[in-house]
Length: 278
Image (tube, rainbow, N blue to C red):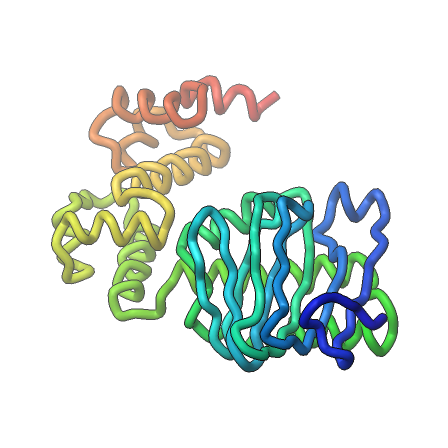
């Protein structure tokens, strides 16, 4: 349908979605999608609009403000806005944009993870751009997209942003991924921080910061978790003693293994094995 409002030009379109209780309970779902041609006086200011908004500026310039921070958006840039909080956005001069309001049971967690890495500008995202345009074009041509398919499209959009933000594509990030794979392949080896940092050709301090940024855990925590996952596999698939498993997974002794296992899983290795045997 044709939207109306200050600064929205006549060639603009908006399509509304009505979602089932199941979609609202279990899926990512769209509330509305749109394609706007905007004049310089286009502005939206709201206390809340219970959803998240993904904006793609096709041409021209725009801005958005939230929490006292103003971010300007150039052509081919994106913004992900938490509309549960007070926000404002609008055109700087004239601009063209595609957008989608969406929500879902895990939308908060996923959007917060993306936002933690800062605004999605001036980075370019070819695949999300195509996906967002596809959502609008299919809706305009055929009506609302089936709920399971819309869930897939929104998840693809957000996952692309999360993956790109988590991995900058730099040689440094590639080195971190290489070290992570080395840990996964050699969890039982003696792997002090200094040795891992040397593999990435970084100082121990910088390596620790970058490893946590890319992987989500500090190097030592990631190593311990990898060893514990291996230990769980051995506890459930072999008859080796707890002591044998401790050494085979890289722990210095049985006591340190049992302490780490209980700290992370809430059970001793023996209790864990017995609980899964029932």
